[in-house]
Length: 178
Image (cartoon, rainbow, N blue to C red; front, side):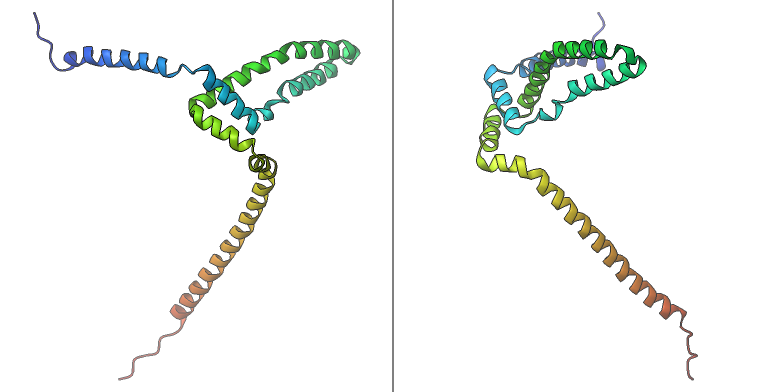
């Protein structure tokens, strides 16, 4: 019998550790229904998936335009067919909501999600949602103005120092008196 040495001695414990970590992560990924409900409520409160509402209508509109351009004589048939097929796919929007809820549930605890929902359904939270983009636009505008002013003032002050230094270096030196 050859005794296990070095690397071979570490293989069995390492394999067991990897196996246990895999089992632990499988359990960690299970999300309770109440946690998912809290995530759905938070998503609804912050309008997190609202930006995706136009994906299917935009895809249908683009497909109609493309197909009608290729064969304008079939416009009525193309429009009806694309609309019917798009309506049939509309139920798949729930898949996006489910995956979004899972993502939020993985990132936040159930209590955090409830706190998020409570805030964003409050008057202050609703105002933040409605006014936030406007405020952000104003802050970005102010930051751009500030950046331009700071850059201008920095360039001006550096130019003054460089001009003074260059002027002093260019001045003829007087011979030393003996």
